[in-house]
Length: 447
Image (cartoon, rainbow, N blue to C red; front, side, top):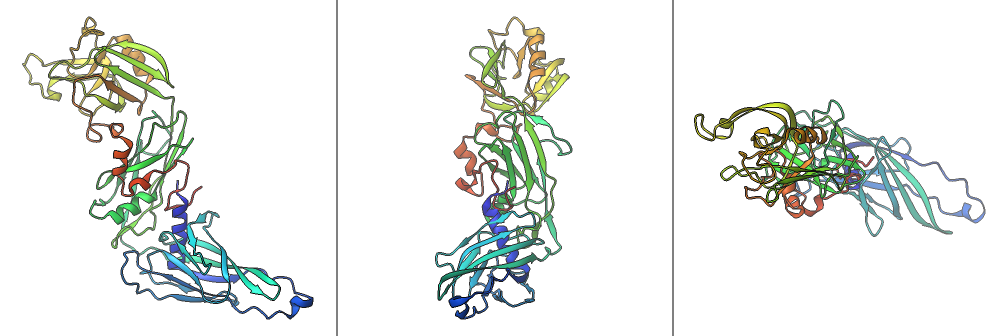
């Protein structure tokens, strides 16, 4: 979900590039007695300013608004005003509260200066929105401080035509809500690459990609390459969680030539925490559900030359029957090691062809010896039970083994083989990337 920082930043640019309509709050009741002799209040004068988000010398002129004037004219700032916006008081008094909200009443993030004369948004605001700014102005009078409420109706201009950056979220295609295992990462495939050489653009994208979970789960994005990101919690998702994902890029300025476009949101749920742990040295697999042991399965894993990868993998899919051939993993036809078999109850954990499956031909070795070509073999009964127990996204760990470590991203979902500090180093936001799963992100209001 969007963080308050985004909300604040959003409000800021709204002011920056939008049309500003000024109205005043309802007038106070007529004063009597000594108060009636008070000097009439003068108009409240405010300037609206912003600079280009690329930094450097500010060439965008400030716009002055008289808040007490009836039918105040609209103020349109130029398209070049793409940075954070500030509102500066040009007269007596101080701003004790400034609130900027969107159409749905969600708050935009910003800061009021210590002296009460300036409010500044934290981030630029995407184009094409409508907002309301409520300002509480405190002034000194003969009977002490007095307050009045002023309002600005704010509208930002539509984004110019040009290339649009959209996002395709996974898992699934977003057409229907599905249930996944607690290890399932969120994936984001970008329609245009954002290279590591442009960290500012990567920060814009990352802040805009919102992930919200109920119950909460601290998590962060990690750039796999220039057009792919993965999001995972620090620990596994909670059992029975609802995870909602959406993009706040629509209308946002990513680079000088690239603006964000609309993307389809994604919602999925998680099932029970089912985890299979294969101890290679003990030749057994232990299956847990929500922390409780539910089954111990004798297994055989990869023999010398074909060792099973160690580390954490995730279930990628299940096939009731699959044809396995040795040449698919580089074993030449006609060699001693070549095989061509129809295999039952196959649960896939890598794209290169590693499965957990029924292996009735190796029953004598299961529980005592490693004789496979890299897969984890077990009895037909155990393989059928496992097939019906696990789902996509369930973790499958291999420990005390001799094989190469599972890689993070190029052969399935090996995301969990990176420690949390390593994961955060793959974020454009660094340590600030970690965010609670039910909080707003900087580029959209929290719901």
